[in-house]
Image (cartoon, rainbow, N blue to C red; front, side, top):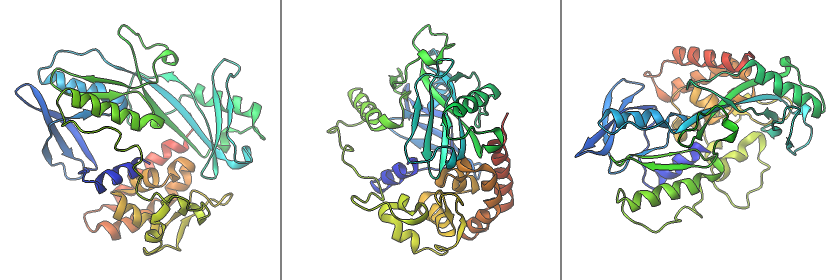
Length: 362
């Protein structure tokens, strides 16, 4: 979904920079007028100039706001109290059928869900404060135990630790009010908040995927009111279809090809469209073909094995051990697509280490 949004923006004139790290802010006459960035592949440092900079970096927004302070802005109180949510993936047989299940109040008063997803079942979630902002946060043992225990009370079968195909963690950027100690993340706001600093840095955080268009409209409206961007009519994205949108197209395409929508014929035109690297033996969903890897490189800006197996397909999240087994084959295809600058061995090793985290229960 995120990649489709980015590609749709690019189709309408946006410039996308992938694998770039923000290292600082550029200022002119006390106002933010761009970014310093580092190319993570080459190590090159660049300066990007813009009349308006929006800090939409989730749980890391305070780090970017710190850059603003370092450049001369007054010290700002942290906005975000990170909250960790743990998810477990098990086979579909634990939740037969196509309907999700919500338990509004578990034994200790929490909420639990089980959701069918790409041939598997997601079990979750938890809400635990986390002080550090790890790039790849790991699950807490007590959270895994809670999910398995509660799921066992409601599912067709009680899942055991050995049934977990992948364990993964998300960090929520919950917005804390002034004076909040952030010890109870359940009580913090799930709504989005927008702040504009004296230097013109626009920060947006909180919110969720289901309200992303509303968040974007609010950001632009406030930026226009501050004179950071030209005033234009609002609501231009309300009916804007994303790339691949195919109204009325049936969802009967095999093995996940329906996810490509109106671009499915483009996918099928690529080499290896019939060469399946992996297909779920239980459902046939969440599949990965050679053509899908090539599509990820040519049209979705994939640059390494992790991009393909975690971000352009979801195999890492569906079955971590299987994703590690597919890493060498994916790397070989990437080498054909990206050329000699791509280090297949290093990319494979890096991904296999990551997959090991997702395959290991605490």
